[in-house]
Length: 472
Image (cartoon, rainbow, N blue to C red; front, side, top):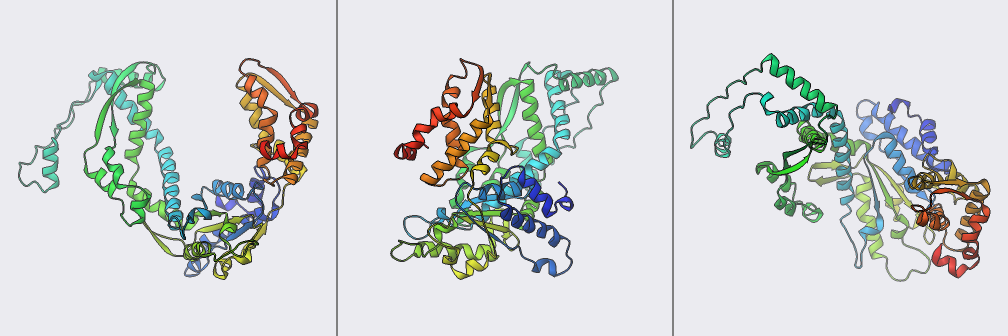
């Protein structure tokens, strides 16, 4: 979608297709996203001075905090990572290096950009793959063989030609006759139309040497090891292995290989780093778990406060070294989230509080919200179950009374036990449809889920609070 068209109202409307309620949170993230577009249009030094206004979402689990951030990034194609603040704490004081969240963001940006580039080059790669298949299926239509250099002559050329004679120039390929050209054109059309899809052929595929993996990993990267694995993989010759596959499978393999050749890795990495710096979104969940001052806590909060102080420079804006180069976090949008049941945002260290100037409280979900979640969003739960069981020939019919009953019981269980928000609906629906899902492959037909059907499977469990703690 064109950024020019993404006004705050349009962003909220798009989020409404997937997330029920939480208007304040949607407005906050919509404004933050629009401010990025506004900043891009500024000129001169002011463009660098405008920093994102990070957001802290406060609300119980299951009300849509993560989903809002995830859908927001998907809406604009921004690199996105979700991390838990608690994974930086362990038994001891400080856990994993907090800079790893920035490295994860860059990796996500590279994956996203590579997928875009591969999609752009798909057409050209398909044509090249069909050329290679035509060479295999009918070698007589292949162009004349060019001179093949040995690895030793290639190495000699890389070293400046010392120690060996220069290879002779390659002769130009002999043009095909009109008859052969016509036969090859017809062959390529037949391959493109799937005429040879089931034929078995033998192809050679590239394989990465397994030893390269020993030089990677997060521990090696966090020690500043750089991208030694990729450097060695570029120097060592590619290993090729023969496989027997159908033409359809070979076409896909060749298309992927040709797409990879058409994408310039260095340019892609530079653009991915730039996109992560200017458009990246990092969602830090469980912020309340690293806040001190909660009731009932005894002793010093060294671990929690240490993690806060480690996160602080990342959120403030710093340069993190990654294997793809330095990455500045000045313009990365950080969205923090937490339930803050036993602690408050003011329990965070003052410096970190100041870096999350926008705070929005998300409401607990009501019975009406549950009914909407079950039926209205594009990925509505009931529609998911309908399509899942339709694969086994079962037609699910949820009546209004059945939907009302599920929403009512989910609300009661959330009140009586832990409030886990919309996630309770997954548990309830699984319990309601357990017998149908189990018998579906052998007993296809229509199943009507009404109030009586729901209460028959859930009412007794909800009444017994001890039992509902374990089952629901």
